[in-house]
Image 1 (cartoon, rainbow, N blue to C red):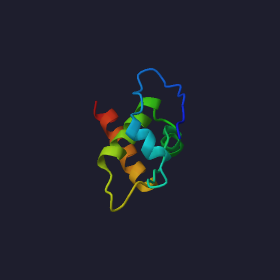
Image 2 (image 1 turned 30 degrees about the vertical axis):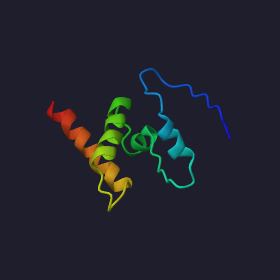
Image 3 (image 1 turned 60 degrees about the vertical axis):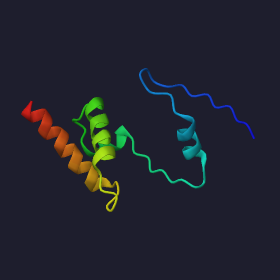
Image 4 (image 1 turned 90 degrees about the vertical axis):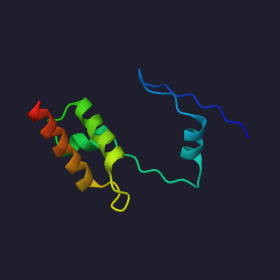
Length: 87
C-alpha cells in the first residue's frame, strides 16, 4: 500500500525521514508526546524558546528507568531558570 502524506513544517524544522514516519505509523513502536504547552503549564514565565530548551534537555538527559514525567520536566525547568539567572 502506498500513502502520500503532506506536512506543513514550521520554518527551520527538519523534514521527517522515511524511518521517522515508519516509526510514527507502526503498531510496533510507542511514542510519548510532550509539547511546549505542557512545559509552559508548569511555569508561565518561561519563553517559548526556554520551553523548547526544556524539552530538548529532557530528550537528551532523561533516565530511561524513570521515563519522562512531570517531575523530570520540573527538574529541567529549574535547570533552564538557573541558566537564565546565572547569565
